[in-house]
Length: 458
Picture 1: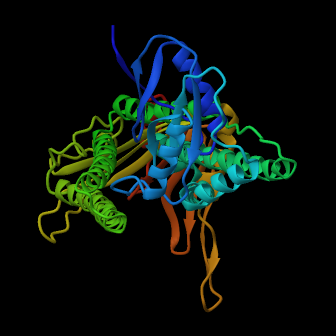
Picture 2: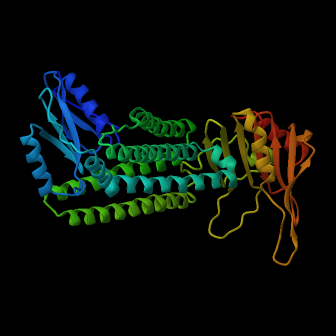
Picture 3: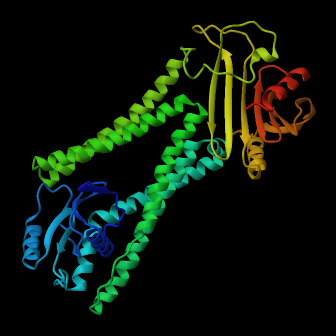
């Protein structure tokens, strides 16, 4: 039988009432709080009994303090004299317990209690929540901008959709924390004027649901990338996730090390902040450089994971050509809405030498949700726009409907450009949309082959 246990608790910083009630229930089950770590609370086994708990706040304290402040020590001595034993603290929060049947409360003045909690909240809790809320709103704006600018690419990307989902969860967490706190604070002030204490409350279950949803979202991304077979994106995502975890671990380790070394609060905060910023910039720069470097390197490595693909349609299927210098680049993504695969086939160059052989590129978008089919089609067809240049000349750039029967499609569109009609088409089938770009004019027989190869390809 284990004598120690750790639990992830999701109580709000200010919610002393729920914390006290929770700790009382844990004690009745035979578990007494021992330590509050950064991400978990640690309990040790005791004989089940009824124990009273009190959560108080000391606004001047900080998680960067090497030792308790003098005021905290005085308060603990006073509490000990009153029968309340100190258990542990976390930054400004202090937790005490009392085994007497009807102990004298630690807090006897509701006005003082409300003011102390609010002062403590203003130091870290409220600023951090407002900062996170602002970041989530900015991310929402960027997500909407991406949705309006290139909805097909976003809807086909599990990573982008799930990242947007995670930011939405964080927004809900911050918004619920701030709304709940301010509602309590304004009611508590009025109650305190009448000499009444007002219990705090938070959405503990809601917070746990958000946390679980975030974990499921991260797992889903990895599973999706594995099933889609996109090793390159999977590698980048795993490295980024590992980098973030390492960053958090290192920053927390530096802070704890400085506390053990008895560094001052200012020194600890400054060093930890600098380490955090430097590592964050290094992580961002490293992932960006690594991604660019990998892509650049793979341009000269035909055997790389980008180019070893089984293409449903190749130039060789359409044109009688014998050329072994082709490179086929594959990009694929998949979400619950869309599945998308893009392939480019072009000749590998040696130096600046131009090789005059046909090239091909196409994107197959499989629409999994019929309700968004027309939205996706219209987004593709209407994406190119005619425009006027600075001198008032009209620049033609739009799709026009053409005969779809040679393509065995429901609808077909061809791109019109100022310098002439291009051999770039959008083909509409029952459950998919195909964008295909030739550097020659396709024949009726080649159109039929495209339909046979791509209209039913997975």
